[in-house]
Image 1 (cartoon, helix red, strand yellow):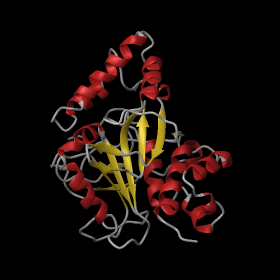
Image 2 (tube, one colour; image 1 turned 45 degrees about the vertical axis):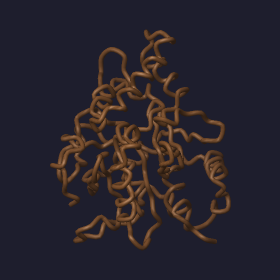
Image 3 (spheres, helix red, strand yellow; image 1 turned 30 degrees about the horizontal axis):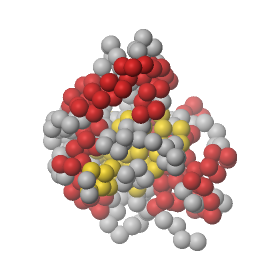
Image 4 (cartoon, helix red, strand yellow; image 1 turned 30 degrees about the vertical axis):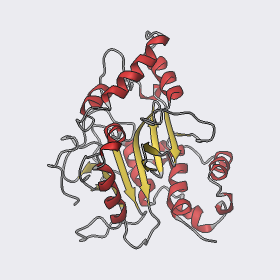
Length: 299
């Protein structure tokens, strides 16, 4: 049996995210705005839920306003400011976080004109694609460096501005432990904020012992079959390698367990800056000086 990054990293990571509370969203039959990759149905339902006083006819106008913000050449600052507002009409409910919706999709294409790229995993919060994950199989020839070079090229392409502006977090992993002493991000799970030039890859260091019994739901065999079937990978279900890579202790899965548990008082930190204090129980790390060159170390 031939194992790829899908069977070794991507599908196990998706199943882990589901156990963390994300809902798997198949792209078959789904509808989304290809200019932003926002899912209007998910967005509309979430806005009505967290803004109960909002008139139904105002939600499409809100979505249009969000799209306009994503056109700015400001590295998404205007969108970020709107995203984190806690008064008035909100895009995210930071007070009652369970009110928000969390979905995970795979192979969602970011397309503008003839240019496109397709992250392995995209995370939707209230229908908005706020994070993506790129994975490589362990012991691949160039480690994570190949993905870093690709994201640099994409970040510099102005056609992808909307996708860069909406992205709050990127993770790149080949599901291996960090190689201490390496000057380059070759092995491990690295995170970065978006950039119009060269995203900075940061190591994730966890200082807190997580209680996985509180974080993770039980495995759901029926849902696992659904995910495997949707990706045409039923054949790997009982393979020892697939079963071992579903472990919460793999570098990719551990990284997402940690970010899902993170809060402003958490002791898990970026080694070059502190996490943003925006009540992020929802799995997103942010450097306090957002997307700045001052957070430049990968150690």
